[in-house]
Length: 343
Image 1 (cartoon, rainbow, N blue to C red):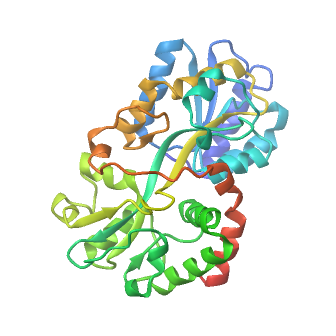
Image 2 (image 1 turned 45 degrees about the vertical axis):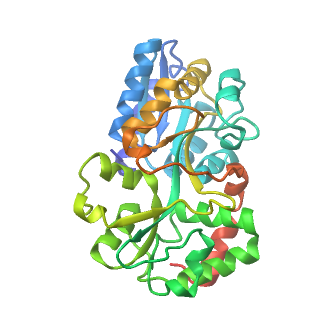
């Protein structure tokens, strides 16, 4: 579960007292700073410990808080690994100087080049496709790509998250990378003109907006919808879900935009060897399959089998754009959002 900043700070302070700048090293331990908040990840950690004998000391919080904390701790930081969601945050950590380059033949061979940092400071381990959902009863000709979301034919029909959300930022950043800044700004303005309501809520709320009739078209990550196939999700009952269709966008162009969950070794990792072992474990077939089975994500390693809930969404072609390049466009994306009035 996520912790509040106050609780996080108290926990981190306790960790520093317990671990200390030198006592943070322990031959059979690993200090993990994580902003992933999924209970299902517990299996990843317990399996790693069972396989290696390495105990994981975990501190959870929001990504920006953890990155800031690692920067403030400096060389005294007990952190060995930063695990977080979205390429923009991984690049933010790299820019803040809290990660380091690592050499690993295992990671180089198993993680595609487009899903890892050019300097090996972070690696992607699971993915979610950001796709278009629509009301099958009301939308006869749903948009087939992201660009078409700005088509005036869909005026008053589109729900989307706010401009402050990292998923919104990286989607626009990918459009900048694939189509150029001018086209991206025109797209953002067109989507704003097509809003059914002001941006609000999370990805599940965008799907609920279709169920409630607030909007006819929305954009969300696949794992939110796949989760509703696997188990009950409030506001997405099975009968209502049957009325929701989906499109993997841009299949005749760049392909579907992918959001990444990844990790890197901390700049001053006291247990660096254990940290690299953990990253290599996350790239193993066992861990990759669990990302899919436990959290309805797509594995980063090609050829790993999908869970039934994820496979039910069908095959698609992902955008192969280098996600580290996409992350560098986030400041430009935020400027565009501000200029077009995307709240």
